[in-house]
Length: 173
Image 1 (cartoon, rainbow, N blue to C red):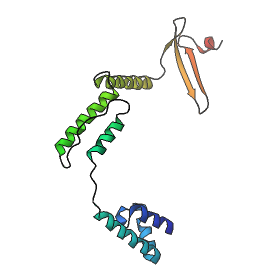
Image 2: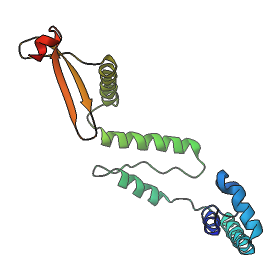
Image 3: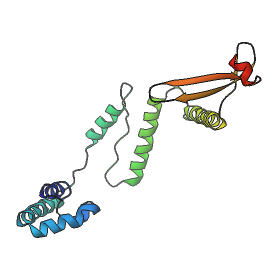
Image 4: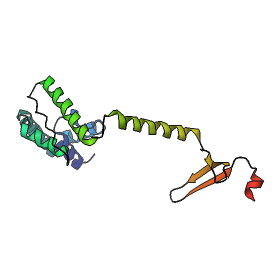
């Protein structure tokens, strides 16, 4: 622990040691208790913390909510959900549902949401099946079945196709 690190902790997390990272808390407190300059810096941070705690949290305006939703809409139509009143939980849930439905309609205007979800689930299932069954038989030009074995490194890959019906001696010729 260095004095610079203690000052960084005070600047980032404030004067309350409970907000500091657990791994550094004891060492930082020991340095503050041993160094009057660091103790003075902690007192300054405590005064700033007190001022910040007294500050009123601003509430976003309806115009700000509208602009955020319009910017999220991208090139399509603006999402036009009325902003809920502060403290209106039911209104907020309705607003969130309506805004998410409008956003989904802009992202996937082709139809219901189950269609892309089903396509994603099917491709995931096929990928897991192919990955867990090992080599997948490949039909060659002559109609015989081949197996494949692959080896990949950082800068090269090798795939070998071999006939499952022949012996090594026949294949090597």
